[in-house]
Amino acid sequence: MIDSVGPAVTAFKAGDRVLISCVSACGKCEYCRKGMFSHCTTGGWILGNTIDGTQAEFVRTPHADTSLYPIPEGADEEALVMLSDILPTGFECGVLNGKVQPGATVAIVGAGPVGLAALLTAQFYSPAEIIMIDLDDNRLAVAKRFGATQTINSTDGKAVEALMKLTHNKGVDTAIEAVGVPATFELCEQIIAPGGIIANIGVHGVPVTLHLERLWDRNISITTRLVDTASTPMLLDVLGAHKIDPTLLITHRFKFDDILEAYETFGHAAKTKALKVLIEA
Ligand SMILES: NC(=O)c1ccc[n+]([C@@H]2O[C@H](COP(=O)([O-])OP(=O)(O)OC[C@H]3O[C@@H](n4cnc5c(N)ncnc54)[C@H](O)[C@@H]3O)[C@@H](O)[C@H]2O)c1
Image (cartoon, rainbow, N blue to C red; front, top):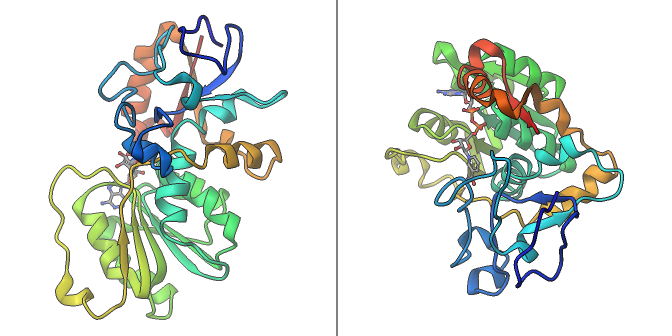
């Protein structure tokens, strides 16, 4: 809920209930005019990155008029928390960039909250197969409940063979990388079908080998993206129409005073089975 507004804010007033996007957009710069809000010259991904984030009692959100979304009457506020970041991330960087098509075969590598958000939103387009790959059986079981048609635990290092068997040696039309380590990007390189798209979501911290010696003749595309949150208004409508239920991603709830316990729980997700942890005021 808005406590107070600065003099430049015209679209919101104190008392309004709003969704805070993870990306701040001035709405005026060259990148904002293209809808590429993530590269706003005075905003972008700054909350929780270059300025303080939203895990606090009070938050100052820059460029409020063009970075906040009014919460529709009767909306499920817990579901809306998933719209600040992970839903638009999975959808824009994974599903839209990966051009998921009706009848297509999709692999999502990484069944964390972002991979699962890609799984939920990929189903807007009715792909024939969505194969989730992860090391964690619990997350793969969640993926099955969320609509994955097949799951592969890649702990044994044989994910490529398993996926090729499932796709009759063809590979996938879209491979969504939702982890951010070299092994998973290289896995996507190995499972992409001719003409396919590797849509990278993961934030990578070290170099990854691009196997052009294998890929040069395969007519593939590789995309990268920092989430723009340009799809947030559309996702709000989808949520309002009850077409997806992102509250399924919420596994734990903590009071603000117990935030350290929340970090502990989130930090040991494999043990605690945490996906998204909600902090309540
Ligand atoms: N591009 C963007 O704008 C953007 C925005 C938000 C998050 N991200 C990135 O998306 C990625 C996923 O985020 P998340 O919150 O879901 O992360 P997460 O750490 O919760 O989930 C990652 C999943 O990958 C699995 N995994 C790890 N190593 C693996 C391997 N070798 N093979 C198969 N699975 C493996 C883990 O078991 C886990 O389930 C991160 O890199 C995050 O930084 C990108």
